[in-house]
Amino acid sequence: MQKITKILVANRGEIALRIIRACRELEIKSVVVFSEADVNGIWVARADESYPIVGNAIDVYLKYDKIIDIAKRTKCDAIHPGYGFLSESAEFAQACMDKDLIFIGPKPHHIELFGDKMASKVAMKKIGVPVLEGTSSPIIDEEEGRKIALEIGYPIIIKAAFGGGGRGMRIVHFADDFSKMFASATNESIKYFGKGDVFIEKYVQNPRHIEIQIIADKYANVLHLGERDCSIQRRHQKVIEITPSPLLNDEVRQKLCTISVNAMKKLGYESVGTVEFLVDERNNIYFIEMNTRVQVEHPVTEIVTGVDIIQRMIEIAAGDKLKYLQSEIQFRGYAIEFRINSEDPQNNFMPTAGVVKKYLTPGGPGVRLDTSLYSGYETPTCYDSMLAKLIVWALDWDGAVAKARRALDEFHIEGFKTNIPLHREIVRDEGFKEAKFDTGYLDANMNMFN
Ligand code: ADP
Image (cartoon, rainbow, N blue to C red; front, side):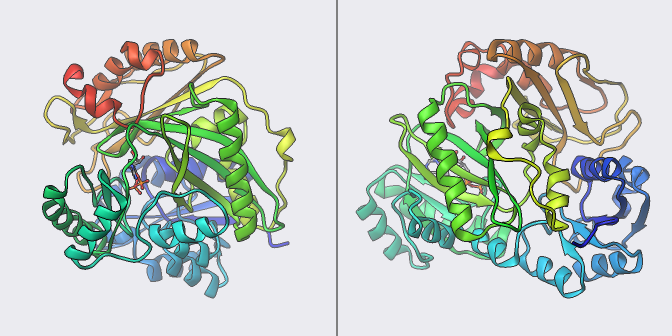
């Protein structure tokens, strides 16, 4: 069995720090590469070794020849891609393997399959996973799209085939709006993903977004670590994530977990992954996509199960067997994660930036903070606006909400606006407290929160 002794972390920000922490506990050395904009990143200081890469702030984290070269020169045995950047590049995973580096993630062909939402729906449907009615090849021609939309029946959703982050998606309620929406989905898809391929599927009214965390080793052992409810979204982007889902009944929960585990077994999937579903008001379930990487919201699962997802991911990549049986995974209490973003909720969520002047962090029982912020840090403007993840835990739902209220009140970041005030209002909302939310909750209540 190949042992990992040194890992290059091909990422930045809180996830780079999270991976470095996992390495430290496993007594594995860590190496980071960083851009000029990230020279003051706390993860750069915390890694055992750090190497600057010259170039555009984003490109630095995508230059995989350079990253692989540094990994080889510094005698790393493996590369952890985190999320975003190269994490879902099958080409990068293959390039690592070609250079005898372990890519800490799934096999390239699985990354490739699930990187294409349409192809993955087709593959999952074939093995018995319920999917939404929709097209199975890209729609290039508007007229063809219009015909298909009529067949499926409005409302429909147009989606970027290679999309993510809620981008390149347009809901169409009436045939008259089809042209306009088709053009804007295609244009946004080209802008963000370099490809204009879109597909059409039935739009589900008022669903919940429920996803299943999977962890699988090289020996066909596949476990689930329960679900996360990611229904609290702004413009299809997750803002708050919860586990377990407060209103999901046990039968549906079991069904989602079983379907996900069986699908991953059939496909021979390895590493961690998340199978995402929509659950409608009648508890019908539909697979929407699979993410072949560690997700932003993994800490809530870690807290209720006690499983360190990043550490296990590293061990599996090294060829270890999974440490646990499904029956040994225990779920305890409720965890909620709040994404703290540098954006102004009172000014249309415009991105903000600046120097962290006053910095008071929440603590006490049941509070975890994953962040790369510190007092005096100047936030770069060129990256994602998520700066911190506040995670709270309590034995029951009401306790978790109370904990969240208290922890959010304790959190003060001065120097620029953040979305903390929005989170404070959400946790005081009766709808939230009673767990009466679906994917439309936040957008529908935005006026109330402003
Ligand atoms: P992305 O990869 O951009 O995050 P997803 O396919 O995961 O896109 O969908 C993100 C969100 O968009 C979902 O959580 C849900 O709120 C909404 N959504 C996606 N597909 C549908 C659909 N067919 N019907 C209703 N809402 C949808």
